[in-house]
Length: 353
Image (tube, rainbow, N blue to C red):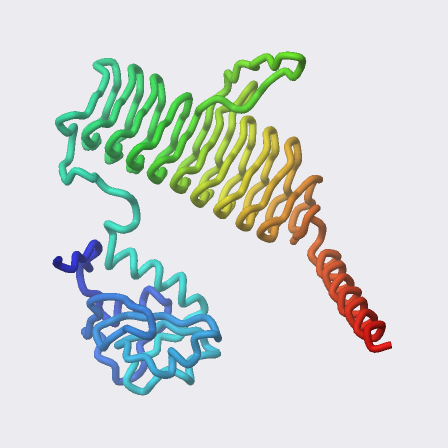
């Protein structure tokens, strides 16, 4: 079987352009016209590759790298081998990410899976749907009546875009996704298998549970990314809102009426219960659970596997179950560890006696 290369570099990048991207100058004597042709980890990079280093754990790998050029933080610069050109910058990873996007622009968002632009044979687009020029709809996709899709957007195979759904420009809607009762902004990426706009889980409890009609929408603002197999329920009485620039990982559940602010980060396995609000720049680590009707303040960070059952003030760092300020959480963990150690020592002494 041949070895398939899924992402081939689009063009080489000159050392001068790399230094400019890092906001610095090339070391003296380095040829500015020299180029890198690809990017690779420190361990496997060769003379034509770009690498980066910003974690002390990889100090030995840096010392032994054969990369042609390495983006590196100031504290690690002395460990770069003489044969490797060091570009010293404050945020090597961010510069590396920008350059990697130039090398592999096709990896920045899902593209057509059928290799063709426009409406593919086998796509089902309702006559009352409105598609701007340059929209791609792959085989098996369904676009319902009244749906509107903007210039440059790609609808993957077997995706379903429901009646009246609006999707902005330069979006990527992955294979097998479903969107209903939703308004989606520009440059939004929805990865395969995501479900957006279905019923929220609402019942009037009793001897028999009466279904509460969910009559809200999902509003997804510009530059949002939604991971594979994530679910975002539409609102019951108000809209579910995902704010501009927010990044959501795979396998996240966002319930009805949730409002998420701008530029939040929500990691895999998170569950957010109904009518909760996350203010701007909130970070939820993996497998965090959030009780309903809470407010998590701007810029707060919640450690992975925590359970949040009360409001979190802005700028806080919380963790644990139930979640609390990290200092209090760490004190509890330390105290428990000491008690367990003391208990073990007492048990050992009892056995000796």
